[in-house]
Length: 238
Image (cartoon, rainbow, N blue to C red; front, side, top):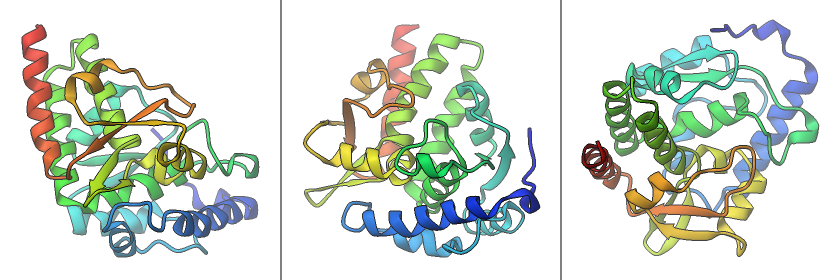
């Protein structure tokens, strides 16, 4: 585990945050789920200051019942879902470099905080993640099952798209925090498929690369039913 040592951030890291924050707010217009900007505003983000976990976490907890916890790097699926089962969002504290503005190969603080925390303000998404995490904890001794749960979750949490009155919008953190992947997911180069549980479980995602396909949910409230479908699928395969 790790802490956030705010005094160690460099001027370049502040500049990277500022560039990314301002740029993504513009690039997401018309491409992001309807309440994103409202959710972001409630968390007190700004372009001029890197998030302080010591103040953001209590604010997040007051709004949602969830809190942030600093971690050193990427977590394996079982460990990550163990955090989220306790209503804790693990977040890295390092920042990408200037050369990685369009797409960072590792989940940095911009990805974790800018991409993931606003979604927790959404009750439907929050209910989904809590229920999915409980399912994962109940199966934690079975590596194959945990892989299936985590793979399904990647298509939702990182790469998710939503159909809003016929318009396809992004909500996954990997899309919200990466201008390159956002363009790819909503452009002509990627397939956009209905969020069918069996297909999502069996379609592997490619780490640190753009995906060949993305899955489109009907609504955030529909995600809880997807978890029940996933649980039934896992039981049938046991």
